[in-house]
Every structure is written in structure tokens, then in C-alpha cells.
Image 1: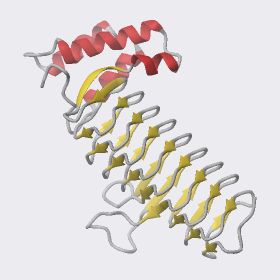
Image 2: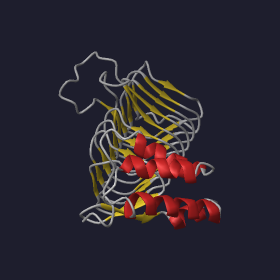
Image 3: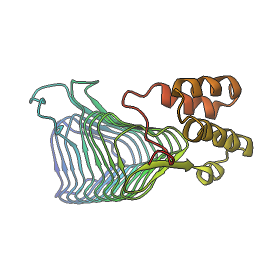
Image 4: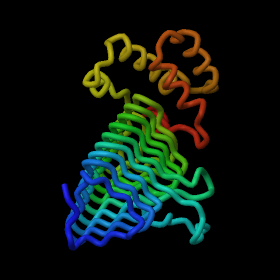
Amino acid sequence: MAIDSNAIIDPSAKIHKNAEICAYAVIGANVEIGSGTIVESHAVIQGPTKIGKNNHIYSFAAIGGDPQDITYEEGQESNLVIGDDNLIREFCTINRGTEKEKSLTRVGSNNMLMAYVHIAHDCEVGDHTIMSNNASLAGHVKVHDWAILGGFTLVKQFCLIGMHTYIGMGCQVNKDIPAYMVASGTQTRVRSINAEGMKRRGFSSSAVASIKRAFKVVYRESQGRLLDHALQDLEKSEADSPEVMQFVKCIRSSKVGIMRGPLEE
């Protein structure tokens, strides 16, 4: 690992001796880069930004830029924290947080961000997520662990994407998607459960069956009744299922409402 002599590095940057900074990469003030992280040519990292170990940041990525928020002013507290073992491909943009929330944008570990992905200010991305080419998060979006966003998916500000969700290509997400669901279509709806994804990640057949029952209660049997009543039923009948309780928690904690289901066209 080494720092190329043609890299442009601010004197205040803290770069681990085992990191690699390639030619013409730009590392700004108040940036920390951990061991084993590779920053390829022409990538730009601005601070305050802290990047963990063994990340790979590809050419022309723009990491830690100012928030695209009209209320942001120079000098306000604004930070970006990125974990370990992430792949951040060409032309990705990740902006720092604003004082509207925690002054922090956070990306976890073991994520794959494909080319042209955008993560806006104050977003929180968990671990083991995949965001395909051109997927974009507006400000204050939360993406939980193991979620997959298809190419060109757009997520409105303040929405939540639950764990183990799968969102198809080109979706427009303007409300929350609860854990373990599949959403798809240009008129985006929650269509089914992510049964295949759950199986691949080692969930038991009983866990998959529990989520299938929960989906049916909320999205197929709740027509004409209050959603709260359906959730109460699940809290009683599926109390022993941590997966269903996570599904219910996503819905109960929603601030913007949940995406409509297949029978609500």
C-alpha cells in the first residue's frame, strides 16, 4: 500500500500507512482513511469524513461533499462516516449530514454501491446492502441491513427501507417499505414477500411462512379495516416470530406511511 506522489492530499488528512491513494485522487481536510482502503485515481473525498478499513473507492467517486440542502451554511457541523469493506463504484456521490438531524450521514459495512449511486445528506445505510446503478436516496432516508435497490430506483426523503427488502428496477418509492417485502413496477407497489432472499440468507421455512402470513394480513385481508387492528392481530398471533415483530415495528414506526399493496391499484 502506498500514496502516489501525484495524489493531492490536505496536510490535516489522516491516512493509515496501509491505505492506498492512487494518482490524482484528492483527499481534503479533516478526512480519515483506515487500513487497507483503496482510493483510485480522480476520486475526491472531502471532510469531515471518516472512512474505515478495506473499502474500495473507484475513480471519479465524490465522497463527503457539502449537503445539497438550501439551509446548509458553511461552518455548520456536517459529517460523513463510512464503515468497513464497502465497494463504492465510479461516479458515486455521498453527501455529509446537516444540523437538521444529527449532522451525520452514515454508511455501514459490506455494502455494494454501484456506479452513479447517490446518497444524500442525513441518510443512514446499514450493512450488506446493494444499490444498483443510478439508485438514489433523497435526504433523511434510512436503508436497513440486507436491502437491495434495483437500478434507477428513486427514494423520496424521510422514507424507510426495511431489512431484507427487494426493490425492483426503476421504482419510485414515496413511502416506507416494511421489512422482508418485494416492491416493483413503475407504479410502485409492495407485491409479495422476499421469500427467495430470506431462503438464501438462511431463514427457516417457518420464518418465511410467518412473514407470508403477515403479508397476507396487512396487504390482502386488511381492506375495509383499520391497519392498527391488523397489526394488533399479528402482535397476538405471531408474537413468537422475531421476523413478524420486525415487520410490525417498521409499520408502527412509519412517519410517512407504507407503500400500497397489490390490491390497492
